[in-house]
Amino acid sequence: MAAKTERTFIAIKPDGVQRGLMGEIIKRFEQKGFRLVAMKFLQASEDLLKEHYIDLKDRPFYPGLVKYMSSGPVLAMVWEGANVVKTGRVMLGETNPADSKPGTIRGDLCIDIGRKPEGQVYCLLQGVGCMCSRDGLLSWYRILFCAVESSK
Image (cartoon, rainbow, N blue to C red; front, side, top):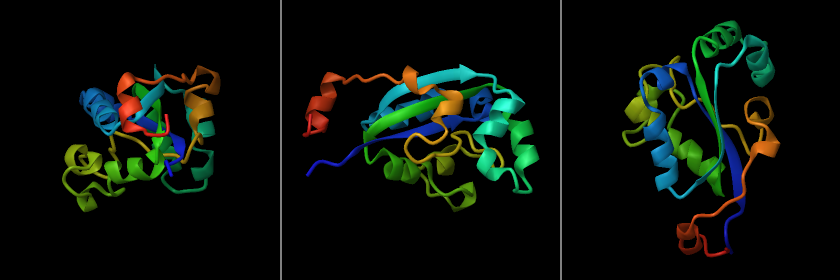
């Protein structure tokens, strides 16, 4: 049986943008066979970030997170594919880059725990409404995916 097609939200945070890591991170997800269905390059306002990170508002690091995320541009993306949520988490690596294996995004590209270039992975469409509107999601297939995804 073919795996269920899912969607997940990935944000490249301000330091990842400044360090020029957008192309590398996008490349890794494309090489894995996932489809980029929405992308928005934006300077997130504090109000938008407070809405996006509402579930973290009582955490001690919340004010610093909002300040950091509003310090520069963010690349917000929605990726689609079979098992993209679980596979995306594996590709990203452990939250603490020191615990991440070489070959993962955090293991290869992160400087420290407070400077994760790829952002957070949110299950399915959680977080998409704030930075990428749902009506902005595209449905499309590359010819390659006919060979990769047997259910198509």
